[in-house]
Amino acid sequence: MKIKQLKLKNYRNYDRLELEFDDSTNIFYGNNAQGKTNILESIYLCGTTKSHRGTKDRDLIKFEEEESHIEAIVEKKGIPFQIDIHLKKNSPKGIAINKMPIRRASELFGIINIVFFSPEDLNIIKNGPSERRRFIDLELGQLDKVYLNDLSNYNRIINQRNKLLKDAFDRKDLLDTLDVWDMQLVQYGNKIINRRNLFISQLNEIVVKIHESLTGEKEKIKIYYEPSSGCEYFEKNLLKNRERDIKMKSTSVGPHRDDICFMVNGIDIRKFGSQGQQRTAALSLKLAEIELVKQVIGDTPILLLDDVLSELDKNRQNYLLESIRNIQTLITCTGLDDFVNHRFSINKILRVEEGHVIENIRP
View 1 (cartoon, rainbow, N blue to C red):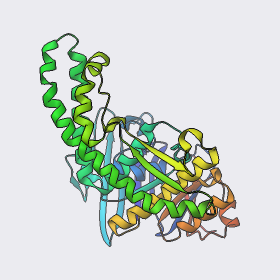
View 2: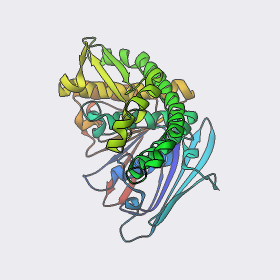
View 3: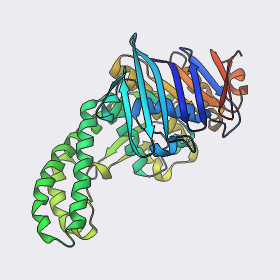
């Protein structure tokens, strides 16, 4: 899987930008706040419809402009796809695949598979459960459209149930419909729990060896899925917590409350791990994500590395760079010294400065 071309118009700090990529390693370098990450963000948007930073669509449009356009040409198993995304300040985004508009943004998922790795991802272990759920949902959404559909339905029902709980403060008769919403919530929630369990099981089969290699076989990692309520108890716990939910005006159990636990040598490193352990586990997780994509789709994902090397020590830098040699990779950095020191093969270098990109620089 490769991205061949990218065109931006009025996106972030770019008036117009047209790029062609090498099939192997592409380095974007320059000072901070010049627009390097914006390029990676636009590519991620073409695979997931979302900014990896959680930015609202209207804030991706260049200042003082009303709309923005992203066009990407990607190749999947030898078949080219053109992805167009129109962002508008006062209306929903428009998406087209091969110039054919799609009705739902979820239809874009799975056209290309992208693994994004940024310094913020190194904190996924120590940060809150919402970030770990987001990791699961974004990855599974790219790999499994059934999961994406179940998640969309679940989120819709959760929003409706929570609205009902709020409205019931003034209209108690609305509570009579809770059974109907709960039945649908359990239906989709159980599917999500089962699929997440399988996903974590698949990751575990890969991540153990990676983590052992990173730690010189000194540490063993195990990932656990922690549902707030298992399938066999979900319906029962919804009913048990109903009075509490009515009082709090919010749904207290379900996949939207779940978490992932990372155990290293029997210790929960979310709470008791050192920063080094947490970062190593995060790196292991991302590398395992790449391998899982390969297994599921029979192709390599596009890898986006946003200034990650500066956050890793030499041992972890070496392991990461060795692991990505056969994957199309787009890397941002402030300088090229790390790559020279590692004797890392660079296929294309691009300098980014104040929303302009200078191409055809050779190492």
